[in-house]
Structures are given as C-alpha cells and as structure tokens.
Figure 1 (spheres, helix red, strand yellow):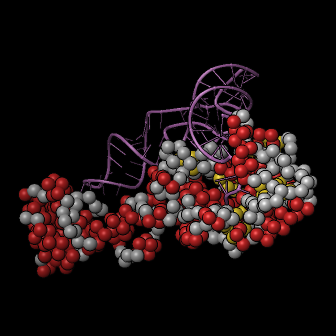
Figure 2 (tube, rainbow, N blue to C red):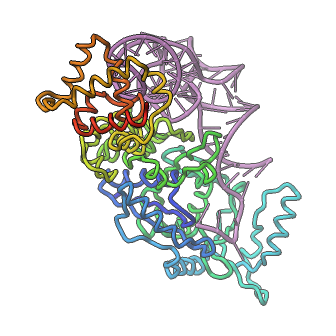
Length: 451
RNA sequence: GGCCCCAUCGUCUAGCGGUAAGGAUCCCAGGUUUUCAUCCUGGUUACAGGGGUUCGAGUCCCCUUGGGGUCACCA
C-alpha cells in the first residue's frame, strides 16, 4: 500500500507551496487506494504556534482534503524517539558527545578561518575515558567515514553526496534530550509506514542524513520525490513577503478550491496538452514521477483563466450558494464574464441593486438629446396601461422600429438608467429579468437624478 | 564560499537523436456582441553560450554562464 504524508512545522498558515506538495501526496495516495497522513513537526517548542495547526486544517477543509488517520504530533512521541536513540546507543551506532557549545563554536570558527567546511571532528566517537563533569552530552550518530550516499530520487534522478563533503556525526538528540529534525523525520516516516516521501526539494540536502538514520536503524528506505520550489516573479523561493502565500487568502479573493488545485497541479506537472482537470482526473491521472525538475514561477494569469473556466461550469444554484445570494437568472447573465467569485458578486450586485449613481463618461457619450427622446418614448410605452399584454423586449423592438433608429441609440441610455453604466450584459435580457415595474422605477429614478 | 539542483516562447509546459519545435496563458489584430465581458479566427515571441559524440542534436557528454536551494544542540 502507498502511504504518503504531509509534514509541516506549525509556524504559520498553510503556504501555497506547502499545499502543492500536500496535494501531490494526497492525489498519489488516493490514486493508489493508499493513505495520506498529516504529521505536525513541532519538536521545537519555541517556534510552536498554537493557531497554526488550526489554520492548516481550515485550509485543508476548504480545498477538500484530509488526513486518513489521526494527526501525528511529534511533540507527543518523545518515548518513541527515546527508544530508538537508546537502541542506537546500545548497538554502538550512536554515542554521547561531551563537547560544549563553546568548544563547538570555536572549532567551527577555526575551520572556517582555514576555509574548511565546518564539521564535527569526531572527538568523542570512540571515547572511553571519564566524561567531563557538568556537561550534559548530546547524542551523535555515527555516519559513514567515507564513500558516497546516493539519494535515488524519483524526480531528480540519482543524486550523489560524498560523505567527505557533506556529512559528519550529526546530532540526533540535544543536550536536553529532545531529538532533532533529521532523526525524527526518518524515524517517523519509517514508523508510520510512509512509503513515498513527496516534499520540497529544499529538503534534498537533508536526505543523506536521513538515510544514515534509516540505515543505522535497519529501516527500509521510502521512495523520495523532491519537488521543485515555486518561485515568485523575481525568481526566488516564494515567501511571505510575496503577499498571497496563505492558501485561505485565495478563498477571500474569490477563487474556487478546484481552480487553485488545478493550477497548482499543472505547475511543474502536465498530462499531454490537458489544462483542465476535474477532481477525479487530478487523482487518477497524477503521477509524481512526471514532476518537472525545474522550479516554476507563480503567476496569477493562468489561475485567473482556470478559475473563470471552473466558474462557467458551476450551476446557478451552486453560485448562489457560494455567494450566499438569491438564486436568480441574473447569475446566468453574469457568470460567463467573470474570472473570480468576487467579480461575479460585483456584477451580480450591479444588476440586482438599483444604481446609486451614473457613470459620467457613459452619460456624456450615450445620453444626448436624441437618446433622451428615445428613452422617454420607451418609458411612456411600457408605462401604458395595456402594456401587460406585450413583453418589454417587444416594446423595445417596437420603439426602434417606429423611430427607425439603431439599437444602440436606445440600448445605451436604457442600460445607464438601469445599471448606471454603459457596460453590461444584454439590455433586453436585463429588462426581461428585472420586470416591468422595476424597469419603470429605475427609469423614473434616473429621470429624477439626471436632468 | 563548500555541497546539491536546475536551464524550450514573458509565464505554465509538450518534446524522451531525424518535428515547419506543439499546446495553454498573457499580449496584439480581426470577427461576433448596439456596449463591456464571453466566444470564434489569426498573429508576435523560445531551445542561455561554447565545445564535443553522431550521417544527424532542444534531446547524450563536458565546460562556461545564469538562476535556485542548502550548509544549527531550526524545522
């Protein structure tokens, strides 16, 4: 069975880049009838943010994904880590190091001064003497002393890290006993049965360390997929400075979850020429081995287009529900012209509500003497007591016919009177939906306000 | 700086030794729409550079350049 996981540290909201690796993991698990797990990496209490988990869950809920099991909190698993640390100590794969922080810093400084790579020198690796007093030891793992560690990455290919240039006996437990990141990640992934690790490629350089842990503990290695970062328009890693990196912000902006997921899925991955994917297709067609190796830039245009396409596929009732407005024919009139729900809502309200003012430019261009006369003729015609017997659309056509003028002469002033501006959906559709009484009222108000 | 990754239109991508380098988006033009939007049609724009390998390289190898990531008793 395929088991994947998303493992954020609870430092803030769910980031757009995090969501992408999360859905990659989620889709891949679902496609294989496997499991998608959520683990919170909160071993560092100082950076723990209480609201963060709630925010992540809220974002998950919005886009419609969830963990298949209870959420795992690393802060609650110290017993498990302790057990494996003890095991490593007993089997001689790890050891206590009594070097103080100050000594370590000094060593690093010297190495840097000599232009060497800062690296632990292994002084306690084979220590058998009497430990210094007053120093709480850290636990270090025995890394290989030579050779290479090869990460068989299914996105990047085989990546070779020489032990010489990349590793040392790194710390797996701090002086206070708390285990460190690379150790707990490896232990948790193994213990939780994670078979496919899909994560950002900023973790690629950590992977050799985790492999050292896997091997020391005789754990089976998972498949690794290191997904390229999403960059901003400057070409740098997407960060909070870039504005909308909070997934939930996209809900506020009026994007549909399916549109955001579709967009993120296609960023760095493709399926032939296919651009639009239903949720089922996202699951059935996705394969992480097809993810591109290079980073991609987040640009909003494609998302806007996708969102517009998804909105077109929504029914009148679905849109009414989403926007918490009455389901009316007006929605059908405006839904194909918007790329976000916010736009749609604005367009809807522009028609639903009577205009509060009238666009100056529109008036200047479309409300001259001849237009005034036509609008008045139309007004009088629909005011007629017998009007109930013919439709507003017919009256509209009749006026044009009688007066022998083009449509625009009447349509534009009428449009301004009804919605306040010279741009809107078909004016005939508008008056038909609004109905005689409302159209009359709006024209009267217009006459009153605009002399 | 060390280590690692990456490199096709502005952007997202197809391409997996032989293509007129395809699609999407954006932009522009025309059409439709009395208007705006939608929609339809058309168009501009790309293999970073240099060496190899090969009958033949966007595709394979090397170098250069450029970009990114990572180097904690953070995650």
